[in-house]
Image 1 (cartoon, rainbow, N blue to C red):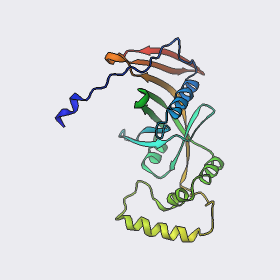
Image 2 (image 1 turned 180 degrees about the vertical axis):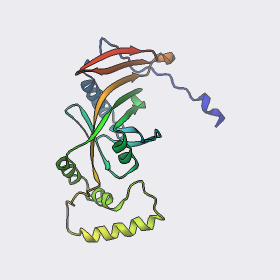
Image 3 (image 1 turned 90 degrees about the vertical axis):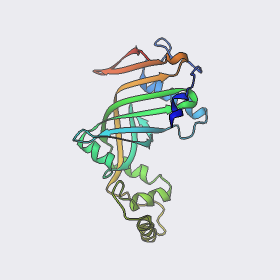
Length: 213
């Protein structure tokens, strides 16, 4: 692993400036996400979600963004998972999108809340049947003795819901909405003089400024 210091990439694909960036960070996010989709990036909606427990211990994992509605970022999970427990204890979180093919990164900090049960049910039943079954099978983040326990549980759930295309949503499963308070748009530049534009929410308005790389 001593060779890691030798891995270097020179970024030179694009630039980002206060005068050229859209002054609504939601619109700028959607612009960059669309460009990532059009560039053929695999799972452009994948984001790193950071949460913090009540005793201050951070945790991070990759989840999928499932929508942006009314300026809020939506994702779904098991409420009893570690991230669900953290968000119940401390609703503050941070998400990061990284698209190395475009030499871009977006950081977002905000506060979460659970979405309505109706929205969670509607999204759950729009998922592939296998994903619906998996949500019933997995006690997410809980220790299990072996994979065979999960496979046996899957067989039981498949039998229970045989012939049912749209399964009822498990009570412990649903969505969160992240209300953003800060955005940082990062564009790689040569000589590590990267472009960084930060938006912070002041009352209902967004203030932006450039950050040193």
